[in-house]
Length: 197
Image (cartoon, rainbow, N blue to C red; front, side, top):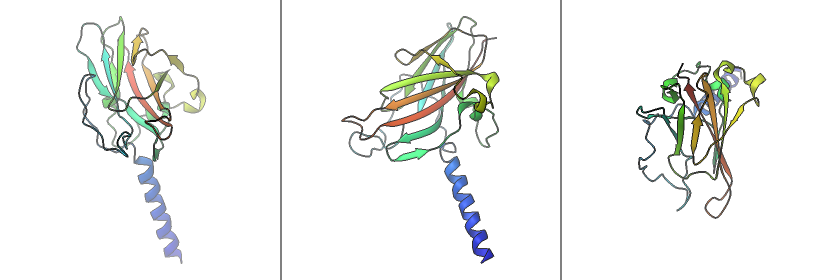
């Protein structure tokens, strides 16, 4: 009887480990610029992609070339698929095995600021909300959960004016139920912008 219980506990542990790591251990796609054509995704029906979009970020500072990178995907509620993720302040503790955090970071190269351009790989959301925390609060999600700065976004562009701090950004993408979408859906993404100083 003990062997059956031990085997059951091991299987439950492995299932929990696999489910918890599912949304972050996927293959990382190379960053794409804002004007790159993306192949058509696999669909649930003729109109609805079966997977939530990736979020690609382009950081433009001064006259320098754009830095293209990808936002890490966190919690997802997409059609028939749900995955859990950590709060951005916990994600950036950099203690997760197998994650190359440099893939999700942009570096301001100009002390005059710049702009961040967001592009979804497919099926753009109806609403995009952006929040940010100073990187000094990394690991403090319990205390700083809802103590973020709201970030203004226009046409998927964020203006960067405060270049003295490093910031953790969270992007909340919302798809509303309509003729093209059978249910409401939501996805969370995070990336980091390090200051020019």
